[in-house]
Image (tube, helix red, strand yellow):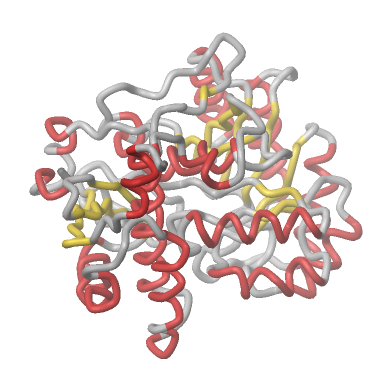
Length: 390
C-alpha cells in the first residue's frame, strides 16, 4: 500500500497564479558603461502559487516590467499545470514560445518559474532540490566574493575588507580594466587585488567584454592572459566579445590561465557549439537567465561530457544563490558559487543571512525545496508589494 507521501505525489498540485515583485532601490552597480542606478529594475522575484497553498520562489534577471509582461504572455501555458513536473512544464513553455524569440525576456521568465517549480517539488517531497536534481555530492561549497574593479588603491582596500569578513575566494570584474587602453593600469589593478586578497586565496578576473562597445580584441586578451598568470589568477572570464567564438577557441589554446564565459548564452542549444569547438575551460550559465534549473542541469552535464568545468554565474539575488547552492550539491566537480559582495538583494531579503564557516564555505541547505525563507518585512524596502510573494 502506498504511504501518505506517495499518495500526495500522485495528486497533481495545480498552478493557480504567478506573481512578480520587481526589486528596486538598491540595485547593485553592474559595471556597465551605461550606469545602473539604485532605482533601476534589473532583477525580479516571482512566486508560483498553487491550489495546495504551497508557494515556490524564483528569480529573474530582467527588468521588472518585462518580467510582469512575460508572466502575462505565458499565463495560458502554465495555468492549471501540475507544479510537481518542473521540467515538463518549463519545456512546454519553451516549445510554445520559440516564435517570439528564444533567449530573451521569455526565456529568463521561464527560468524563474522553473526555479519556483523545483522549490515546490522539494517542499512537497520533503527533500532539498539538489537531491531531486541528482544527488548530494557535497554539503558545502566555497563562495567567491564578486566585486567590481576599481583604481588600485581602493581595489586593494576592498578585497582586504571582504577577506576580513571570511571570504577566501574572489572575482573582480569590469570597472576600468581593459577600458582605458592602459596595460600598466590593468596590471596595477590586478596586483593591488592580489595584495588585498592575500597570496593564500583564489582570485578570478572578469574583463566584462559583453559590455557595450567593448574596445579590445584577441591580441589584448592574449597579452592580458599572460599578465594574469603572474598573479596566480584562476580564470579569465569574458575576455572577448560574447559572440567571438573563433577568438575564444584560439585564446583557450594559447592562454596560460583557464578561459571562462557563457553568462550571455541562454538555453542548452546555444552552449553546444562552444563545447563542441573547445572554446572554454569553464562554462558559466546563469540560472536566472538560461531557462532555470532544468536547463542548467542539462548544460552542466553536457559540459561534463566534454570535460569542461561548470561554475554557475550568479550576479543576481538570494533566490538565485539558493538555486546555485542546490545545483552545486548535484554535480561531482562543482566547488564554487558566485556571491555578490554587499548587495542587499542577496544579504538583505531573507529571514536568516547566508553565513560563511571558519574556512570560508557556505553550507548547502538540507531543508525541503531551496531551503530559503524570504522576509516580507525586509523585502518591503526593495519592492512596492512584497505580499504578492507569499
